[in-house]
Each structure stands twice: as C-alpha cells, then as structure tokens.
Length: 181
Image 1 (cartoon, helix red, strand yellow):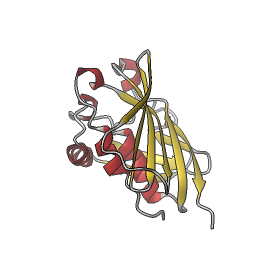
Image 2: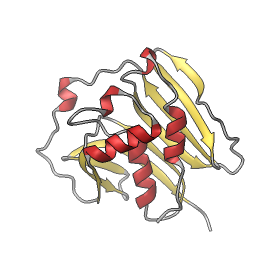
Image 3: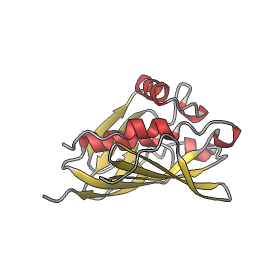
Image 4: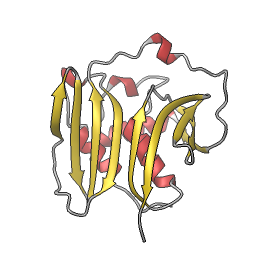
C-alpha cells in the first residue's frame, strides 16, 4: 500500500477554476508525482491554453499534479451507453457510490455539473486518489489517460496491463512507477 498522497488537497486547488469557461470541463489526462522540491501554490497554474485544451499544474505537499482539461465538453449519448457485452478479464475492484462522489465534490468544492445527479461521472482525481491508496507498491508517479467517462459504481483496475475498466469498457490507460529503495 502506498503512502498517503495529497491528491484531494491538490484537487481543491484545481477546483478554484470557477465560472462559465470551466463548466463541463473534463480531465483527459492526469499525472501525479512526488516532488520534494515542489513549491506550494494556492492557485492552479495554467501552463498552456489552445483550442479548448488547457494544461494546468497544481503543486504542494511535496507533490505535483498535472492535468489536461478539455473545456466545454458535452458527454455524447453514445458515451453514456456502456458497452456491457464484454467483461474485463481481471482486476482489483474499486467502488464509487454516488454518495462518495457527492462528499468528494463538496470537500474539494468541485461544482462541475458532470459530477451531479443520479448517475454522476466519477471525478478523475477521485479515481487517481483511490488508485494511489490501493496501489500494490509505493508510487513515485502515476499517469492516467482517460478515454471515456466513468460513472458511479464498480470499476476494475488491472495493474499489470495498466487499464481501468467499467462494465467491460476500458475507461482509462495508466502507467505507474514504483519508488526506488
């Protein structure tokens, strides 16, 4: 099991991005890593902004979080239909009840409408936090690339293949590096 990370606190920094521009934004990539020399920042840093793709860095607690946001994204009807015809082979189960999503978004002050309602999208940084908590070894860094939305409910993590599944559909690919020593 990995040491406690501060992803939730870093998510709180990211959630300071408020207003019309950020409504419905989705995380397409997230990378967390330990950084002993990371200067703490109380605001998210926009590093690049081009055609609705925004690269943002949040730093603090000896950690760094880099995310790519796709702004003004509307989840398509096709994306909402889960491909349940194929079961994921194997994996460690992670469960995201609606109430857990509500508590998380309230704590980090994430007001994105995608994370509300009866079948909310699981916040990408909540997935990252849970993966860091359940990782089979101490982690130096982890990088996720989301391919589609993950909704409240059961997910499977395949640590060997670097894949995250929900109802037989791969929702994210990831890479992780174990701490040395």
